[in-house]
Image 1 (tube, helix red, strand yellow):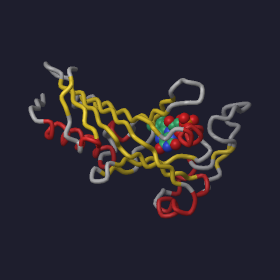
Image 2 (spheres, protein in one colour):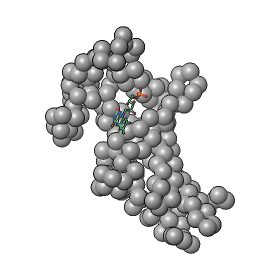
Image 3 (cartoon, protein in one colour):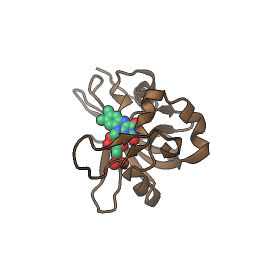
Image 4 (spheres, helix red, strand yellow):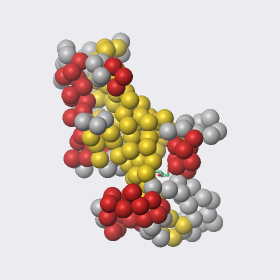
Amino acid sequence: MKVFQKLDDFLNFGWTQISRGKADKKSPARHPTLVTSSLDGYPNARTLVMRRCDRKNNQIEFHTDTASSKMLVLKKNPQAAIHIWLPKVQLQIQMNVVVEVKVGDITIPSWRNVPKNSRVAYGTIPSPGSIIDNPDAYDHSPDQKRFAVLICHIKSIQLLLLGLKHIRANYKKTNNWQGEWLSP
Ligand SMILES: Cc1cc2nc3c(=O)[nH]c(=O)nc-3n(C[C@H](O)[C@H](O)[C@H](O)COP(=O)(O)O)c2cc1C
């Protein structure tokens, strides 16, 4: 079991786990939950694949369909949260993020890197979340214009490590990631 006495060491451990989301296909960090606010008051949580993470610039990247409902909500309120639970190391990671949405020609370089068989995720007809008559009543029409890159700018990271004695800390960008211990 890991024990941390230094805030920096704990944050480094957190980032090692976050980075595995991109580097290790088997890591649960590959599938974070992105939580957005919603128009009806109920927050919306959904699983997304982590496409890129960048500690230097405090970013996590996701890709989505421009016609999905999260796009409308993010336009109104780009503040969102990311949640990751890593059972092997007993670590919960919570992040507050501001989501920058990129669509159009600027996404072409990223689109080129999307494998052909994965492109079907961007362009479903009718739009994701539409009511349909039966489970098969939809088509795939992969379309770069329906491809959105979501760049999550991380504003805070909260870590909770379960153990004989739980350890919890919060780190804020505004505090230059210095961090502070929290009672678990
Ligand atoms: C394992 C898993 C991975 C997923 N990856 C993505 C993804 O990378 N991008 C995406 O838009 N949706 C992905 N989804 C589907 C989303 O969870 C969600 O259903 C979809 O984006 C519509 O969300 P919205 O209606 O809240 O906008 C994934 C779902 C699962 C279960």
